[in-house]
Image (cartoon, rainbow, N blue to C red; front, side):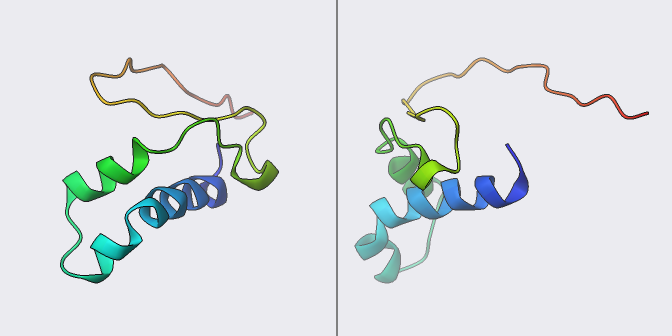
Length: 68
């Protein structure tokens, strides 16, 4: 996932809690609440797979790029 798509994902999460975000300070819990409402969203085609975020612990992956 590149930086632009990550930004679109963050935007989608905040859009889910937009009214709450406009009424006061934005906190981590609010952002997570918005992210957890994302279900099967491919971000308008920016993601090649539908994304869903669920509450709870998430596995960490070893994501890296090889540069020559």
